Length: 244
Ligand SMILES: NC(=O)c1ccc[n+]([C@@H]2O[C@H](COP(=O)([O-])OP(=O)(O)OC[C@H]3O[C@@H](n4cnc5c(N)ncnc54)[C@H](O)[C@@H]3O)[C@@H](O)[C@H]2O)c1
Image 1: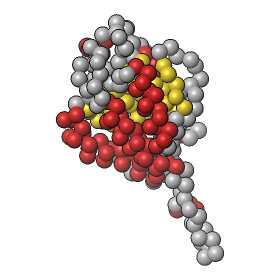
Image 2: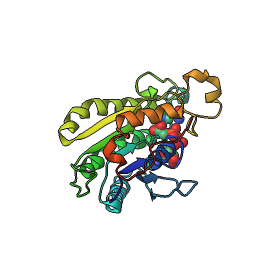
Image 3: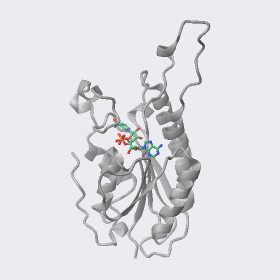
Image 4: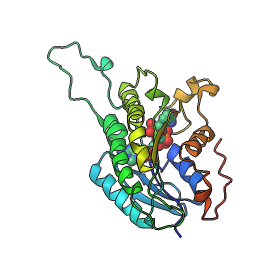
């Protein structure tokens, strides 16, 4: 009988990798979707190279992921990148040098790619499953937003706008997802010790303002109900991993 199965985008490093290991310790199977391969080979995972900003790539990843176990229980739409443009620092002051078309990759990945993921997750989570440990269609979606999704961030406005948009999507979709037995939530960490923050930034932050990985994993536990008894049906360990 296939154990509970999750898709995690941006699973090859940072928060996504920590969440992958957390789920593996609870006997889940995990599809790791990322533009980059993971640095280590993990049992009970399937890596699928995916750029989430491409609909075709993400649709093909979900199809393969579902076919792996013919079940899907939890989707963590976690992949994200920082700002790739600036507005006010690039003003030329020269009438012959108007602005060039801005880079919009941050919106393409963080917002459009995550929206694609919600659309696909809703479909595959809703498919009937014949496994006893998934008695009815439905499941859990958790987006990785940010404290930048709640507060202004003058240095990274596209990033902040994309993360605000994820909070807006959750607030707008939660009630319509519910009748489909799907919950949709977001985690909003402050700074986290991963490769995402620019070099030197973490050192300028008071340590108590940095979100520990174990706090984020606890949030995923709550929002995706990872401790649910029926999801332990595969007989895995329930101890988890200490990522503090
Ligand atoms: N680190 C922080 O301070 C912090 C704080 C709040 C929120 N977040 C959010 O957490 C999430 C994870 O970031 P992280 O801190 O673990 O950073 P990270 O850079 O360690 O991990 C991000 C992963 O996403 C992958 N990725 C990037 N673009 C992708 C794409 N187009 N398609 C698929 N995968 C892609 C990268 O290869 C990488 O493995 C992001 O959404 C980020 O915005 C991070």
